[in-house]
Amino acid sequence: MNFNLHQYLKKKQELVNRYLKIVLGQYDQNRELIQAMDHSLMAGGKKLRPILSIAAAQACGKDFMFALPACCAIEMIHTYSLIHDDLPAMDDDDLRRGLPTCHKKYSEATAILAGDALLTHAFNILSNPEQIFKKYPEPQIRLNLISKVSLAAGIQGMVEGQMLDMQSFQLKQKDSLTHLKKIHELKTGKMITVSVEAGALSVGTDLKIIDKLIIYADKIGLAFQVVDDILNIEGDPKIMGKAAGSDVLNDKMTFPAIIGLDESKKYAENLIEEALESISLFEETATPLRAIAEYIINRNH
Amino acid sequence: MNFNLHQYLKKKQELVNRYLKIVLGQYDQNRELIQAMDHSLMAGGKKLRPILSIAAAQACGKDFMFALPACCAIEMIHTYSLIHDDLPAMDDDDLRRGLPTCHKKYSEATAILAGDALLTHAFNILSNPEQIFKKYPEPQIRLNLISKVSLAAGIQGMVEGQMLDMQSFQLKQKDSLTHLKKIHELKTGKMITVSVEAGALSVGTDLKIIDKLIIYADKIGLAFQVVDDILNIEGDPKIMGKAAGSDVLNDKMTFPAIIGLDESKKYAENLIEEALESISLFEETATPLRAIAEYIINRNH
Image 1 (cartoon, rainbow over the protein chains, first blue to last red):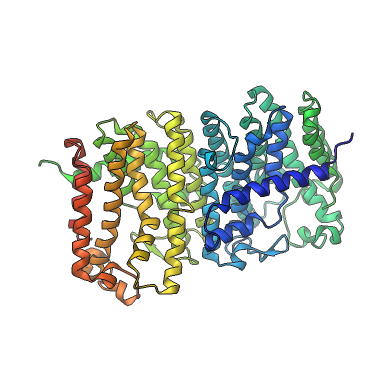
Image 2 (image 1 turned 90 degrees about the vertical axis):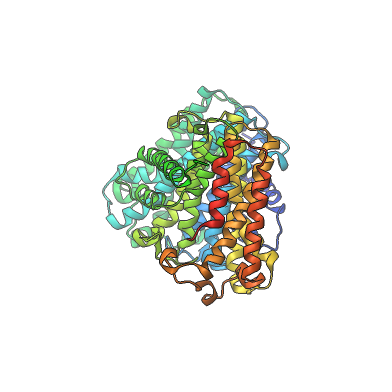
């Protein structure tokens, strides 16, 4: 296979960053609110979620440019969640990706408002993308995207996942695999799944095919978290950027802590196999999705 | 005129509260996130914004039940903004309407997440109201509502207004009437205006008529703030629930501080006159909107 994933990720990252810049570029760059939003949006994230949207649209054999409004909206929601999670009242982090977190660089108040503005603007982009994007889905699809994305991000998704994560730290429910899976499913899984779904929806894909993509996304989302936990034990601290074993030191609920290291590895491998199986109906158009799944299991950071 | 505004406001408040209860009633009431959202939504607010939506729909001579999804969404967004504004990093308030603020009753983290969830869920209701509401606008109108509401609440509206309000406190730009008007326009005005607009849009009103309603809303929104400032000087502390003159003590930028008390009263009266003038084309259907405008200028708390 001649497909170069590294090149692919880099090019798609640049594309998403370019459009995010266009979105914020419409506003007065002297405003602190815009600067704070830009700081966190452009802080060098992998842009995994929008790239999954693009790869899903490609798998369906369609023009992925139709997915760019959803890409920008989803990345804005992901970024708002990081800004709020980093706040002193939550995880209290000073650094993210080597840069000061939003509240450290600006202020807590500005960080709260920058998060609020990113979340709000995501729905503005989805409802009314005409101004910036040359291609965008028709109204009924945009409404469907808003419905799906707001569900994945809200009460029954990401926000509740963060609540459960904070509470589980208090409760020390370390023995419950079901509970751990539920936290990951809500906190990160639903947004990863809706990213894939939104890419396919944006290009007008058949619901039966979307169901296959949803299974793929559910599996790789969970596998990503399991591999994260494994790397925390076995990873090279130099590549990881943090000390190995920090989860154990912090008494964190992890897959290896509950089912053991070997079982965790098998579990992650099975999830990736199931993900690939679910998209076996696609021809070469799904090469990027397949490569992303394999990257998740083989990555070392 | 036999119209009883007090009765009207009470009945419409109860209607909005009933629907907000139905919305949240669908979720597990043992969850702290749901409890925190409910605590702030049901904390006895006037529900002015949704009532304006209902009154605008009525002015257009249509069935206002079509406006209820917008009513609930807008009240959720208003409530999220109060929760976040009350946080220690912002206004640091312990009490609101005589009850503990969300972060005092629960925790800062829960309050941040409850606000995030309310904001997110507002867009879920607007995009996909089928489950709960018996009547709701057609898809193209819902998409339009999401676009308008997200604009009023975000970068170019409420969130930026709160940013400017915080910065003006640092900058002490007390002499600028233009600056004060801009803060009010963004922080509270745009959401009041979109409330009226959303009510009319929800029942499918002609754009020319909506333009008249928008002028009405812009004027009463600003008048409301001017009267607030006047009452802070002249109001009866027993009725107001806070000491008269607290704005002066807190060195707050107000209309009386910039243009004087008498000019402020004239200004508020003119705004209400202009508001009423703008809806003079309506027959008796606009009685509630007219009564609300007169209430704003004559209220004593």
